[in-house]
Image (spheres, rainbow, N blue to C red):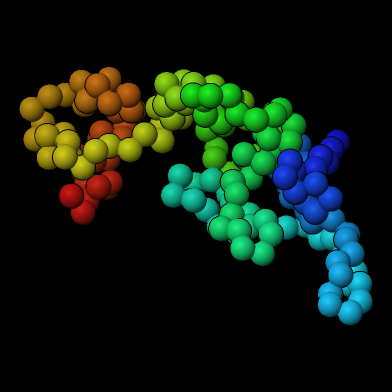
Length: 161
């Protein structure tokens, strides 16, 4: 069942649900000579960040706030110092409350590796392709799968390097 809570800092204007949805609320605003009523509506995510997170603009001059941050802020509270918001299933666009948790940066990086989303530094691509070491060696060293190393060696990935 979907539960809605006000977004801290935007009380009475916007709400977020435990399913990762965001909506504006009905409100009345003074416009120079009269009051104007605005009907609330569901907000569609604006765009993806570089990391693949969904963001939504809140207010008139907002550049956007990440939906997963809004869900955690409303339902769990402010982020503790030196912690990240981790997606349990590894899908950065899945912003359900049951899929989010606060954890350390190192645990978040381990999750990224576990879900196979780690990026390989471009400076290592020539060394991987040189076949000086086995694919198992590179997979263990970089915390990625052997199939990723194989795709790099066969130029199915990182062909531009």
